[in-house]
Image 1 (cartoon, one colour):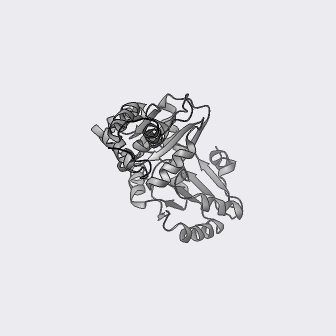
Image 2 (image 1 turned 90 degrees about the vertical axis):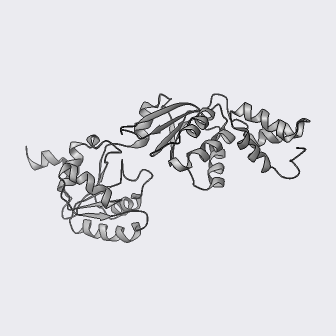
Image 3 (image 1 turned 180 degrees about the vertical axis):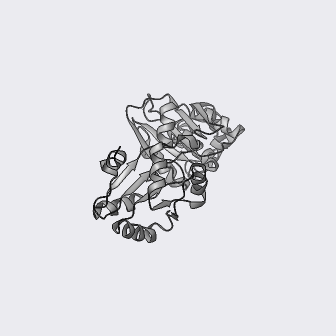
Amino acid sequence: MTEEQRMGGAEQRAGHVGTLYVVATPIGNLEDITYRAVRILSEVDLVAAEDTRHSRKLFARFGIKKPLVSYHDHNEQQRQSMLVKRLQAGEDIALISDAGTPCIADPGYRLIASCHAVGIPVVPIPGPSALITALSAAGVNTDRFAFEGYLPQRAKARADLLRKLNGEQRTLIFYEAPHRLAATLIDLVDILGGERQLVVARELTKLHEEFFRGTVAEAVTRFEQEPARGELVLILPPSTQGPQMNVRDALRKLLNESDLSRREAVKLIAKEYGLPSSDVYRVSLSLTEEEAIDE
């Protein structure tokens, strides 16, 4: 087999200009790396990695001995110019993230855009992606879906985004960190409704891989009893009931249209939405003084 046949036309150098390879790496189980990915990482002149310490473990497993340079959110602008110059000088470079496919909720798209702008070939080396891995085994409708990346860390920004997505008729996919899951689930109940179906995928491809499937309210109880560990993918299939009234609006409506005290209203709403009364009571305290009525 000739070198041209082995490499494939898209993977050859374009004259004296190098090629940027966008290489997917495992999200957990190291056996998920492709033969092609190992070959490319072994042949390039340089590998730009999100965390070089993390990537060295992968390289050691597969005997890859190539220089690594860090490329992440905090040094992206500085590194971009250097990497483009080296590519223009004829070096081949691979871009990898800590896990999965680069540029999916990770830095890198600006480097790729710069390469396209100056005529440097960009070649994807496909492989694992947490969102596709989770979606494939979630058991929900996949005809149409929207990936929203990581939910905002700030409570107001997160709630604002979820309100905009309320009523979305595509399956929604989010990434979330375990220490923010409890707050996110409460927001989901408040804004999308406790009966909304949810899949929580965690520790994908690892020893303790788990898929939780149930309602958002059930997820609140489940992960209160046993807090989640590891990176998470949240999958929300579209509601068949249309947009749900959120907890705050339901409280406001009940307080304004009935003679119930706040404690009585909190008890009813907590039961309806499948939430602890203490969480609903905190929501009630956020109502304005005009809306807050008898205790």
